[in-house]
Image (cartoon, rainbow, N blue to C red; front, side, top):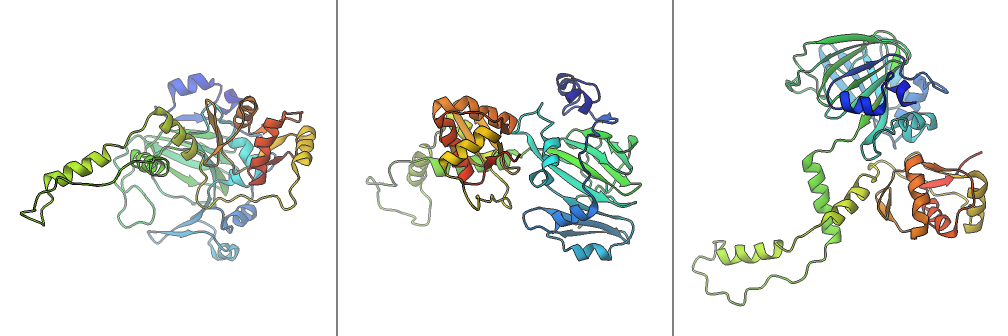
Length: 373
């Protein structure tokens, strides 16, 4: 499957020769769509409060952006050309879109972000820009002209509501048709303009900034660390300049902060929780009529079990993480839970009580459910 998706390249060839190095155009990369998301379906998703959506227009030399939820009636007032609607994380709501996203399993789930769908009539564009992360751009229906450039000078239009490059000099150009896909490394400028009505499926990858990672790690430490002692200065002498921060005070505070220590285990735990944590607009629906433990075990034995489309499950060593939490599980359950994290589902079968108990805890929170037959 990877060779079709990557234009005949193996995953190893792609990662060695192209990943974060240079663009790749792949003709007829993916055409196996059980159904196509049409505009009315995308508008329904854009109207939801648990999705992120944007409507971008270019009118009279100005960029206009509206952020969702977007009322369906808003689309009745749009012209026939020159606009784009974008909906993030469609994989969290449409099963076959999730199936497509997880075809990119030659990269770890810690790197995979989401599948965004954008629809545009002729002339629709979000302007020349670049992303800070790797992206695959899959054309679905219609045609789109893509121009790309390795120039990432960051010369953006001032006061524009989106990041649009002021100066863009195309180095390569292609017209993508249904099923064609373009891979772009981070900060590779690109400019797509719809020639016909159609959609682009954008498969994006997580690339947090150093500032974001370190800041979140410090938050993690704040929740996990238990430091002893408190400020004290029994050797204090009378202050000559009470407004001055004296050296003794600096030394005492330095001593308190020097207690801050972490090890690789702390970092591994942080990675598991942070990279499985759902985005702020995501929530999970608990079962309306929950099965009891025995009923759940019987359902798993007969039907198997699958993660909710919005769930993220990771593992490291003896630790299992799901949706920002550490999942408590017995050692005997770990191989099966790792299998679930890799494949996002388990086949029907008789699993031991330790496995069922861990699965049932997740089921209770709406993180997974028996597979629908």
